[in-house]
Image 1 (cartoon, rainbow, N blue to C red):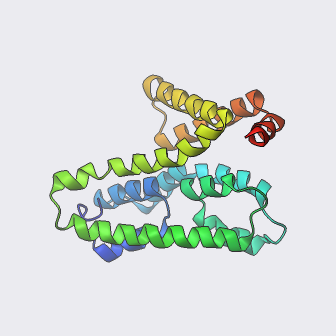
Image 2 (spheres, helix red, strand yellow; image 1 turned 180 degrees about the vertical axis):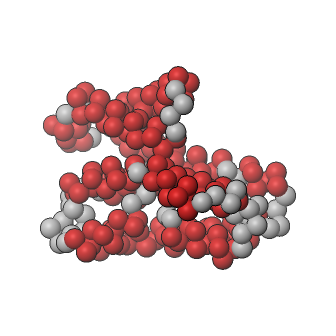
Image 3 (cartoon, rainbow, N blue to C red; image 1 turned 45 degrees about the vertical axis):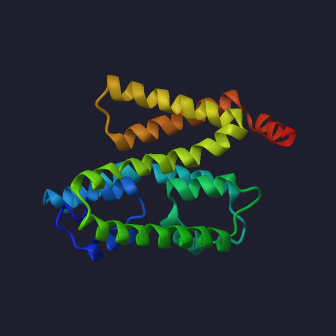
Length: 207
């Protein structure tokens, strides 16, 4: 997308380094391509990425006491879908060192992948470049499947979220960013009611 918008490989890499989210990057590149305004860029990024605030609030329940405010501010840079999933699945409290390690590995891989992808985009046929977009969905599926296989509660919440998303898409004109927020909150509330914390703990113990 970046190459198609006439951006350099370096610019594509800097977009990945400064905005560690695929959906935000994709929307940002489209705005740059359309010569949009800074205000438009801010509003779009806020709408698309506001769900990370919910993820960050959730992770605060798992933070080690060593997580002072400066550590929280630094770690907030790396709150993404994948990092949230990995950290949420860890037993016990999360230390700053653990969070920084996960974020560092993810950020290096992400920026390197973007750089290689942008370079490939300059030489690959357009049809091949477009087809690579499906890989992103495969990555999200890979994050969801393992915990859903282990815990019925996760599977139910994922299915509820998907159903709500489809209904909102078909029946409303709500933006994608707010749709994600609504799905996350509604499915999480349903999961909390249907599967209280004690049930989840018993389920894990049984396994």
